[in-house]
Amino acid sequence: MPACFPGVIGCGGTQIQNEYPNIVETVWNDGEGISGGGYSGALFCPDHQKDVLPMGDKRGVPDIAGCADKYNIYYGGGYNEVGGTSAAAPLWAGITACMNEARKRYTQGTLDFYMPALYSAAKEAKGVLTRQAAGNNTYNPHWLSRKVEGYTATMDDIWNPCVGLGVPRANLLLNFLAAPIPAKSKLAAVTHADMMYLFHQNKDGMLIERSCFKDDTWRCGPAPYTSFPLGNSFTAVMGEYNRPSVFYQDSTGAV
Image (cartoon, rainbow, N blue to C red):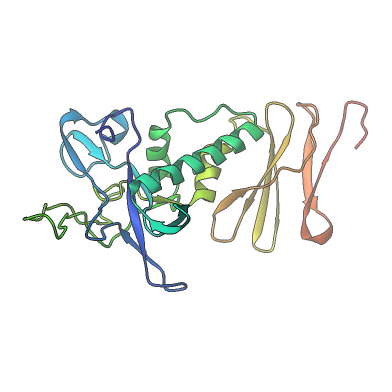
């Protein structure tokens, strides 16, 4: 409580094993603290969880996860290493703030309660959220007379009761939630080498770029493009420095 409330986004935790470049991310469980999770004994699962949970019809937690280990903070006159899901939750708050900034740039509304959108992202956009297949949330601290059996993380379903849907690849999640291309938008695309550039106008006439890499991952461009009246045709060609150039024709025929 209150993470199990259907109107709350519950955040689990992960920890980093090994050093770069051999990093492995597992369920946060350092012997004293864990990424708590499981199924409510009283609350039923919300609609967006009904086709996701591997067992039962009760509310499952957590929904998502973030790094909960090895945060260095300045406190009490020096730097201290801390962790916990209480550190992972502010991480998600920061990601959410970044997505709202991007949505504001694209003249979209802010994300309020967006848990249903997270579940859609996990189902529809491969790689946006990644689950950990190693670790568990069995609780067995030295001061407790018995261990509390938890769950083992698996990749069998898109959700598990250790890390939920998983940890974000923030850039891909931003693309999915912050810059959808509206239906019936005019589009222009140009390809070069391993890149594809896709353009469309938002409702205010601002030209928006999305770039596709050879591995089919998308990013939103910084949109340093001008606005022009809606209804005009536009096209894209490869310009200088292997960057696309966009042309449109105004009502007088000028390009």
